[in-house]
Image (cartoon, rainbow, N blue to C red):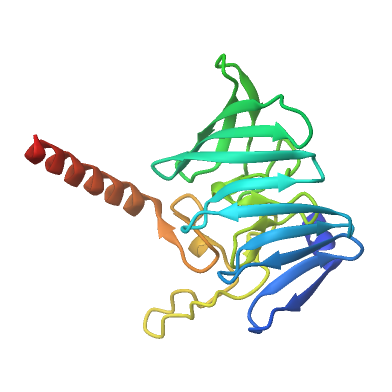
Length: 229
């Protein structure tokens, strides 16, 4: 049996007050708290240490205070892409700035320091399994946080197991009664992870469509600037 399936078997899940969201919890390990939008804002580790998270309106992770690692970090985005991470210890003033380089899906694949030297790389399987290092509770596959405790990828509205390529709960978006699209409500990105991604666990987006939309927005801005000048 795959490792992640064994790990998942040790998780206890309970539903929230709305009866719709699973909350993985490892026995004796972590417990999670969520905001009104279903985003995980606090992780309690062993009942003593906590990790706090703050998100943008569109769901991007902006800030974390991690009592486990003893750090606070700020993620910097440019045109929706993660480009830098500012990290500082909870006690002390020595800070570090790393520049992140992402693939078309938004997954960080390299980190460089201020001198341009590569200090970290990330390699993923097609469905997001991190190959060359362990999950570290930072943005990883498609920009989502990859949990070190559970081995899962936290995609906000649902948890995703990258080793089996499935979510742990059903998609709240039901199947299309005409085309049958989304009939399997556990699968990830319509079984096409090179073309689609799942921004928040509820729907898929075509990468090509995102690129086209971005180009259109850019063209509109250029036209407006030219007219203004």
